[in-house]
Length: 419
Image (cartoon, one colour):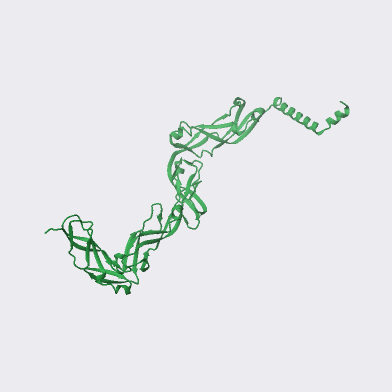
């Protein structure tokens, strides 16, 4: 290798860096191994561990209050090579509480040890501050509290939110008796917008007192970390009430003026049920059963899947007839049908007054000879005697006129050839 090459290598930046590192390592090895002097180092804010807190004290229904507030400072003395390798996590400060059996404030000397791998025999404790720790032991308390909510929920048009549902419905809080006694409930806050279906979320909660103020303490534990909150969303709809009209007695649907009170009810429930529900039939009204007007009250039939927000359980159907006239006609034209073989039916009823109804110009034309009364004996046993049987009234020659009401006639049933 030429001198020129050597000069070039020794003057390069890389060479200078390598030489600097070698010199630094050499100096450090000298200080540690040749000049390994004794030094002291102070460690502050060392956390205190309580032996027996999580098992023995818990079994005795006791708890350490403010266990995170205690800390100590230590000044350690030893060789530089030993202390320089130690950090706060290698120092263990502990207090034995396994003999504590009652509440109160006690003072205890703490023990200092080191993590595995550190030779404690080469380390001396020059100073402890404080020299002992003060431990407050309180009664461990647990109680079940209710869940309350603050909600800001908006729903889409045609929907409504029902009361929130919580799972679990209550939570258990545990901790120092003095702290737990302040807890009244767990508060959940929910904010959702424009909902059109039921949603469920896991929500955080805050412990509060009776005045709604937050109760904060690291010493409180709860049996759950979150609460499942369900926001039930249902459809809301106004549904029309209707009545089925049976034509008869000369009256047709166009003659009937129907009024229903209330006319509608407001319902809530699952959208798949309520979306297709447009009316609720209350019942039937037979126009042949009254002369000019009638009123009947019905129970509003609502399925169990739906809720009646209106709160009304009954509706009244009122009907009045228009453009019709009535007339009373007495007829003696009485006959019988379904007479058993071997029997003779004789009318005891000689005359029957019937009410006929229809347009005024037609009603005027009806007379007794247009009326035919037919008694039905199909329900009679084969026994002689007198019976009241249902009768159907026919109006011959006038199909647009009808009979109002139900009628019966009395018949005498005898065996043929009998005395």
